[in-house]
Image 1: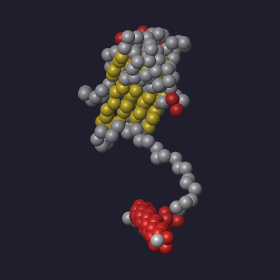
Image 2 (image 1 turned 30 degrees about the vertical axis):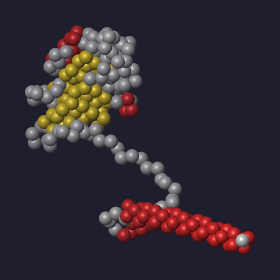
Image 3 (image 1 turned 135 degrees about the vertical axis):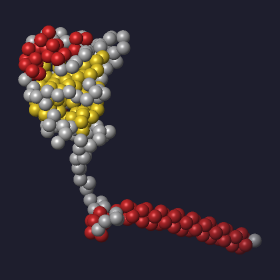
Length: 247
């Protein structure tokens, strides 16, 4: 009896060992299959539809220390513009730290990072024939008396110029009559409605008329009950396409 019991115990242990070995083999098989699938996927990703040398280089690069690369520069062009037109996009300031911006074609003419934006009225002059910027300037209308210099800047713009204007913070406190008349003469309908911290954007031309139908001017006033940023009104913007000068 003792011998038979011992024999059954040895058989049971052998069966357990075989089961464990079977489970281990199955686990190794699954792991090997997964690794093979992943390796095949990786190789397929690294071999593009291009020269073999490029693929070999990509494979050899596995495990190398990654190299940081600068991202591709963003394009700011207003993509809906057809050929032979200029794309423009004007944005007023929207808070203490949300400065005004002017995009023209793929150029950022006025913006905080370029260092040529400030409180008051910001203006960019663009040559209509070439599409190149002539000058940019901002005029503080709260702390300093810049109404007269701004009037001279506007009146000094050469013929066939585009003038792009917008406010950041306050553009009204020291805005005098001569400046209002100069802007009004360029077609503004809202310059006399501008108030403390009104958001205002305006596109105009000197020496020629812009075509009817393009977005040219917009204004929004600071009203504490609706302002998202305390006493700062919302950012407003205008954008569109200006036909180029016929060649």
